[in-house]
Image (cartoon, rainbow, N blue to C red; front, side):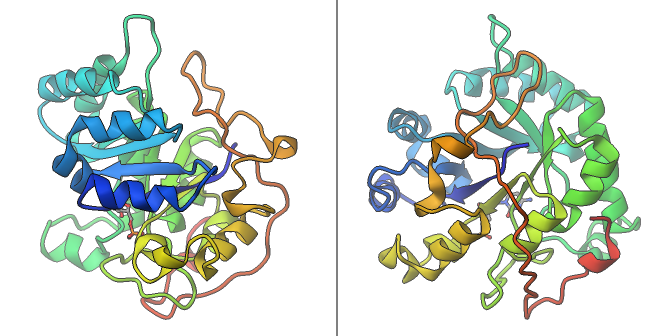
Length: 289
Ligand code: C5P
């Protein structure tokens, strides 16, 4: 399974986004375009970033009746991104319809993954606000199985849940994990978080990192920031993000006719450097790894 870092381009304008990407010079990191940028700039920003050679995870988290999601996915499929997502809470019927809509006449499609429970949600909110009383890790696993049964390629989940999801849904079932924070960083609105090192140990396939990299002053210091260095070390690469050293490159995914995102990098040895975050204390020791 390929492993990689996906940078969340949570900017409110094309100018800020392109200025950030220009900091990488010849590097082409895998990026995530979410609601903020997509709603501010529209589909053209996706085309522009695609044309610059970046792999793209389009994080729009669709959730509606099956027919609407199917039609919306058909429209988004034309943008030719690598990964796209929806909410597993929309039901298996919605996920199957999405898959249908996403599949192009020639049978190709972007990878489709489902958000299980947002990494900003915790057990208390689920209990008190949403009236979902099952333990959060059970809910996440159940949603992941629903996504797998509907034919999806993987899930968005907390890095803390990646190991148990692989154990239940298979090693090839993709785990894309936001909720990554550096040991000395703030967790902000994220709750179910851990460090890149720990995420890798538990089994994340792709970590999604936003504010720890993109928020000033770190962005201004890119690419020599401590954030960059730690991620580089985590992935055992010599250059910034390692995009990509030919010696360790291999296809990220091989999933029967669905084109794999080009150029994800296989990670070699584990980097044994578990750090714990100050806030909140993470409960991953209790979870399957
Ligand atoms: O800044 P931060 O590293 O928290 O960014 C995480 C990114 O991942 C944000 O763009 C957020 O929308 C997204 N995301 C998430 N939790 C999910 C799915 C996506 O935080 N379950």
